[in-house]
Image 1 (cartoon, rainbow, N blue to C red):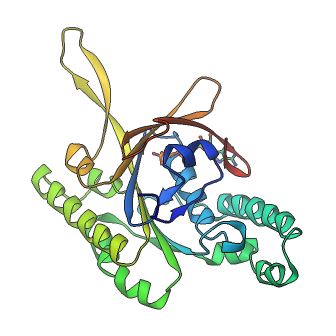
Image 2 (image 1 turned 180 degrees about the horizontal axis):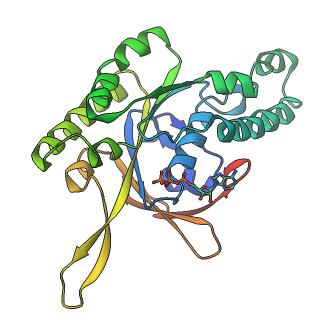
Length: 259
Ligand code: ATP
């Protein structure tokens, strides 16, 4: 397992929970209630995947499939500024050859390294996933595919019964799994939580992922994000083959996701 390359995030807590970062060749699902930080973490990973090798990153690019108009360039620019500034400071300790190389890592280059695909509805989502192999031929540096949110197109509009929905989600995830392994890239998908009424002795409501168990079997790693008192976010590892810790705490700051 240690040999799978990983995308190092800006949160040591998350990295250590994930065994060193977001694994390539793997589908990672972020689930959580609205406002829990799924989009923020996804955007941060789109920045992180681009960190050059001389700074311990993998120097890749990202595709961001935006299903619910979540992509906010101004917000990504804040994260990109912080990341590139930090790397410029680090570059002072590099030798002159590496430093020359690292000069190309700017917030503009980070913005250009995120290929945003805005889609509406299930049909466009399926088409976008089918077109990914072609996009990967054209942009060989792509090492991350994000779908934010995977659940959203299935919750609104187009009539879609549970059976259809399950089979579409399976197909999308199985195409992504094949790509992840073949092209050695990471896939990150987000999934909302919906309130489900659980009829038990004390009728209480319980949060469950919008795309539920059917999806859980198809992802390699599942994180549950939730706000905790004080405003930080707790991430709990619901599925994944890791070791050290099963939860992590992070902050959402102007600069991005931080411990
Ligand atoms: P949804 O399911 O509605 O898409 P989500 O889980 O994707 O929700 P995010 O959009 O990732 O939620 O998180 C939004 C939260 O991130 C905001 O409520 C805010 O607290 C925090 N946030 C966003 N931008 C900043 C910023 N520049 N500085 C600090 N916190 C921020």
